[in-house]
Image 1 (spheres, rainbow, N blue to C red):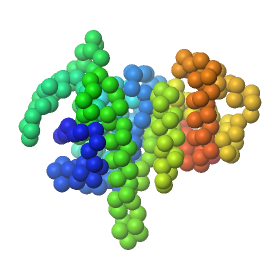
Image 2: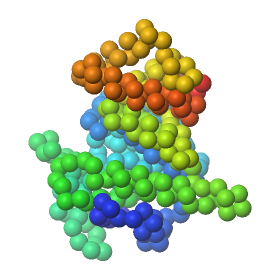
Image 3: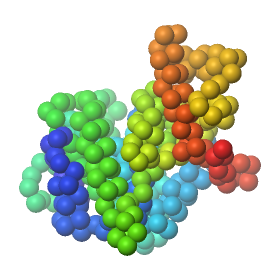
Image 4: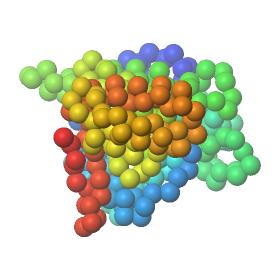
Amino acid sequence: MYIRVSYDTKPDSLLHLMVKDWQLELPKLLISVHGGLQNFEMQPKLKQVFGKGLIKAAMTTGAWIFTGGVSTGVIRHVGDALKDHSSKSRGRICAIGIAPWGIVENKEDLIGKDVTRVYQTMSNPLSKLSVLNSSHTHFILADNGTLGKYGAEVKLRRQLEKHISLQKINTRLGQGVPVVGLIVEGGPNVISIVLECLREEPPLPVVICDGSGRASDILSFAHKYSEEGGIINESLRDQLLVTIQKTFNYNRNQAHQLFVILMECMKKKELVSILKVVHEGNFCDQTS
């Protein structure tokens, strides 16, 4: 199921549609996946354990999974895990892709009201657009009039996640829906997303998939070696700055700006969990 909406659609209207028209039950947990949009490889063992862990968390809690919806980068790996699960099990997981309308390949096939459409998920290697990931159950496509650009979905997704977190799933205890950020690989913007999660009120806990590359590995390193209050010793600081420069092809000034954001994240490192594959092929939680 899918809907095309204006980028400034109110979150209460969206959630009403999801519950009433799509007939979804409110989740007991919302897993919000962020990471690289460019395709990247995951070590086979890491990919296997990441997929199994995500599916198990969703199945045992009745979670919704939010992703960027298109079949690239981290979303492709989430899609592979969902596809593997659906081929072996009848239990359906609610995976909702929130993408900008302007970057969707074959979007013309989706135009129409109350219609069923055949959507071609084969990507065109020459196109700058992206196809939707077929392993998702629902899509929200945010339109701000731009073509070929990300951004229309960012505020809408953040506001929807916030609105869902305020829904009471235990009225007696007044408990809202817990939201957790799951970070896999990613560019420099992902480190900013982590800081936004940690600065939410109440803050959102974040799980970092160590070993997946780029932003995730930098966050994991900083988490391991920083002290309380986001302090790190000078030699490790220099090492981190060099790593940031090399990883993102940044100059010294750009690297320093990102380092400041990184250390702001580490001021709330108690809300950050690091998941790392150990030799037996299981995840261990390296939360400090």
